[in-house]
Length: 322
Image: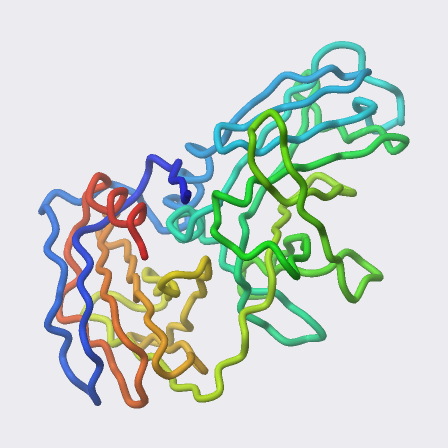
């Protein structure tokens, strides 16, 4: 069962269109006129992360467990220490951000792309997590003599449990997050387990640090590929617009490269069903459009107008992405 937790979001009704060579899109989404004030896209993504933030109190010098609203269970087996390595007396505040659905990942700009042997590969994601810990407003870390044990429910993602690995997030030179194996590893497989309290299966693994982490597997390479092009309307360009592509019926999301007013995502599988989600900031307000297509060679999605978007519309559509 996919879940959706974010409150800050954007758009309107999605519809499926058949591709054609250089054809105008005929399924442009209609939006309410007011738009949502965001200032910039960077602000928008940061606000969405803030609204997704959950906080928990756990013991600073003993075993403690938190359970998130999505069913994620995290146990710190021996508490926390400060920068000098001294145990913490009192409660520690642990902050958690979860992104299980494609909609969450779009809203926080956290793509499902892994950097493996220098190559950027599309992932089938089982979900992303971010953990931070503070005591008296100062960052602290888990006791190195203990463990960080994680249970992530499988039902949130629909990802096939077999062959799943765990990755850590790092920011690339383009400001986007990439998922990588822990330092010194060329693979990092994890298993599944049964949570008797939640009465469901999930992914079980240990973390070695508090940062962004993700579970998933590589998406199979397509046998035939084509490029997706999106022509942006006047006033929208690389400085104020992002274009995301989500894959229907799999938990994958990638960002297109925008040069001038043309966005391009290369090497997408021919015949795959995807959604193109275009998000822009103009006059400090949110603008958005979403279109479903079947990928074919020579397809260009022409956006004649990128209208203002309300939060309620986009929240509903991101929740219902196929």
